[in-house]
Length: 157
Length: 290
Ligand SMILES: Cc1cc2nc3c(=O)[nH]c(=O)nc-3n(C[C@H](O)[C@H](O)[C@H](O)COP(=O)(O)OP(=O)(O)OC[C@H]3O[C@@H](n4cnc5c(N)ncnc54)[C@H](O)[C@@H]3O)c2cc1C
Ligand code: FES
Ligand code: FES
Image (cartoon, rainbow over all chains, first blue to last red; front, side, top):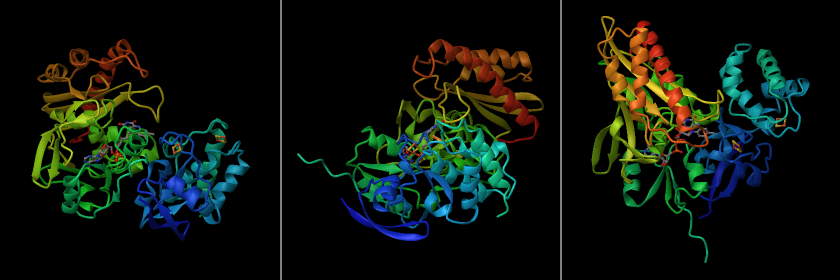
């Protein structure tokens, strides 16, 4: 049964048509036209679909979009436009932390959620690994990603 | 023939409305969705059932400690909140919560979901058994308490009736401490090949009560009473712990599967048991009471 809802993404309200079990990931991609979040596995294992809901990193492939009514979703399109998100994106580029780029939006969203809950420079390597363990990267071998996150964490906010 | 309609999505904001919805017709309780969304997509759960999201019922969330030391955990409390809670020191349940999946999994996944999914390999269940926790089930006709060790009836199966909701996990006060450890091939995003929780009550340096529980070692999480009994009365010295740890094999009936062979599991279990007992003892000596 199709219903309508308001989905708040990156500060804008989208009025969209949804089924009871439309995934947040599909709503973002096909209803809102925001394609940064990717379908990798669809089972919560890879993190390519990571976005934040009320600031917390979540897998958008494991959420129904109706669960987000009344909540606030952020994607890479929004967070990297300015502020610390833009710094994170820049550090990823500088550190060669992006090769094919399929994992990057998810990893950047997990990073932004980490930086939002830690003071500048306070995130330890252990914190970074804990925050990113649910994000797989097939290309980089992770070391450039760790570098980028360390540097972004140290940047003034 | 057209496909039957998928069930409706509902998100009641109070418990009585929620229980009424569960009573009316077969429904799928949605907590964090980290199991349910995949199970519905795979056809393991009937998609024509209504989805009842429990996350807006605030009574179902949170961790609180009574004056008498009883700990109450709301079923819809996220695994991340449990893993990071300042309310209680680290213990077998919080150890288990902090091992589940990745950050995203724990941010959404709940302890109630972990319990009701009833995977034999689930990471919070040995802690629930070792803590001697009671599980509160509520329906429109009343509530009942089921001890953790009597809740699980098989892989994915529990005593919960379709119209019942798991509302709270009630953990009695403790004189000692507990710990949970699992064996995996990777440090994160892996499932237990086997896991062991140990809980020790200690008085004047002597073990006065103990419970040891295992995951991925039988069709359900199980208590290992022989190992626990062997600890009681000892001063928890190395040889006593070593001997008791070996006795988990009296309970373990692991299977061969993709994650490990029966023989490998039986080799690892006593080692993990020894380490889990050791960590629980260390925590008890540091004054943890959980
Ligand atoms: C990538 C990934 C990795 C994972 N790794 C692990 C791991 O390492 N260890 C581990 O133990 N698990 C793991 N899991 C499984 C899962 O995350 C946990 O079982 C989690 O605790 C489930 O909680 P949930 O709130 O998401 O449950 P849901 O998916 O919402 O529900 C699970 C089941 O329980 C029922 N249910 C939920 N809450 C209640 C309630 N209060 N009353 C009655 N029924 C209820 C639902 O109807 C459903 O049948 C993993 C999952 C993913 C996707
Ligand atoms: S697509 Fe969501 S975790 Fe892989
Ligand atoms: S850059 Fe290709 S998967 Fe990470």
